[in-house]
Length: 148
Image (cartoon, rainbow, N blue to C red):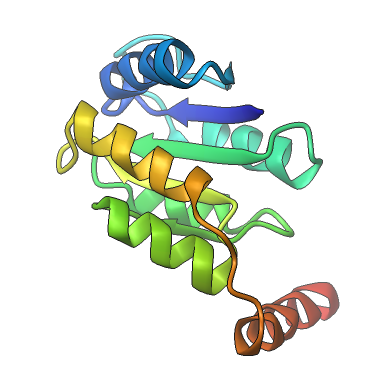
């Protein structure tokens, strides 16, 4: 499995630590779409790249990180086919996967520590999409996205 990661300068430290933990403990390939240091940068540049990797099916999931998680979430959702939500707990990730078939999660480095972030990643990966009425809603979103 491949997971696309990115961050801005405020999420850089958490991203680097999380990538290492995911590689070591889960054995997944982690693609790092930047940024590469803690120097101020613009999060959309990196969120677009990570989300595009998921949209193009180069990665199964994406994890986008900034200080609050809000900015990268908005940017990732601008990529066609992405369903990204902010996750603060593992239960947020489980609900996002089961209800909206989330393929990208946004994390706020200022509100999520490494162990919590790892639990969020595991929650996303280990959960199943429930289908049924949720499929109807996802199709409504995709249909809207395709005409607008």
